[in-house]
Amino acid sequence: MENGREIAAELIRWIQERSQGRYETEESAGENNQSITIKTADAVGRVNVHFLEYVIAEYTIEDGSGENSFYFHFELTDAEHAKQVYLEMEDCLLKKNEKKKKQILLCCTCGLTTSYFTMKLNEISEQLGLDMEFSAVPYEHLFENTDDKDAVLIAPQMGFRYKSVKEVLTDTIVIQIPVVMFSQYDAPAVIRLLTETFSEAEKKEKQKAEESALQKLYGKNGTVLIVSVIYMEGRNQIAYRLYDKDNIIAENQITKETYQLRDILDVIHTVRKLNPELKHICVVTPGMIENGKLTYEDVNIVDYDLCAGIKEDFDGDVSLFNTTDMITLGYSEMECPDHNCAFYFVPTGSYSGNIGIAANGGLLDSGSHMGDRQLQAVTDITAFPKNPYALQRTPEGNTELAARYLTGLVSYTGIEHIAFYGKMIPDAEDVREKMKQFIPEQYLPKIVKVDSVRNYLYEGTLRCLKQL
Image (cartoon, rainbow, N blue to C red):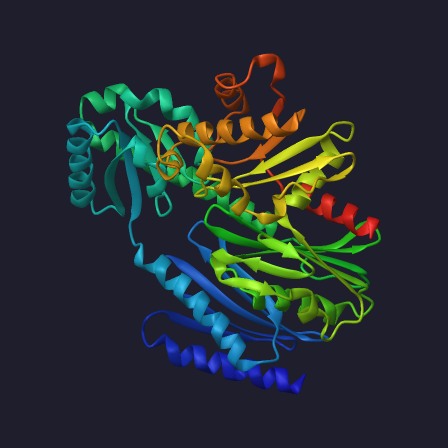
């Protein structure tokens, strides 16, 4: 414990030295905790060190609305590791600070009218000293330009796209400009509409943050730990659940931009310290899994023996599974136990995604363990109307891709039920209608869109563990 207090004191002194006028810091300390708050114009970072049975460090970033955009925790035993994690957090914090103005994107059909309206909006915003900056983009490039945008304005002539844009951009404010405002170039009215919308959204986010702050972070007496990694919407979500038999006794989620094996091992190490009776550790991750080894080429991991790495100081059982496989198995168990089914998982920004198949109560060894390599191979032999990288830019293009991939799946397997997750594919019926171009309707399977996959992943993993 004393060593942990020394490391915490060193870490906080180091953070103070790094500030150098780039951000404000404020220290606080109690009998069982020590912390430093890092304040910028647009976000607040915190490093909290808890002196419990073990010394636990928590790093968080909250933006102006109170939403956590960075969260990580680990046992504080190594000062250099703690500093490395802080550098990653600091980079994220300062990037938020660089974005001083709210970024608003106007979507149009690439007409001069919208460009002129954008210029008028920027003029009024500058005259009034507002923190808003406007830019315009044609629809076909909309979705690749929304990562750093606070709101999207849909021009009236693109009103028929409003519903699908809103269904895809669930984390971004989407507004259709009223015809009267657009036709009269009424920039002040649009800015008032945005101001009211931002204010209401911030109230909702703060309420949501207050509710989530009550989440239990740690638990004891757990026997099974499942650590899962899902890459979606440009971020890596590392979540874990701790079970005692079938009872959930603790869970948490960590959000980071990068995928690092050290993060997974930190979670395992921290939970193990609080749960010496832990019997089984399971990691669920993207990538190819073979004989306990992980290959995830997107992050430069090739043939890494993750199971052996965990077993170096752990005597219990260790399992390693693919993310899409576990989602598929969980969906099969919870939603269609009496039918063979497939699950198509396509994060935003991926033109191929991954497919898993459940048949006869278990996973079908169909190559789904190959991750995104499986469907990239299909891409190479399929005649697409456009380059698949171009198709992935819009919901219509993603619907086209999904219809072609799933047509091949149905043709080869005769699968009866397909579920999918993909924000860029707004509607299951659209996929089905597109598939009718390739397959007679009587042969089409049931197609279902799901909005969340985490519970399916845990259910599938528990099922696998019970069968071991």
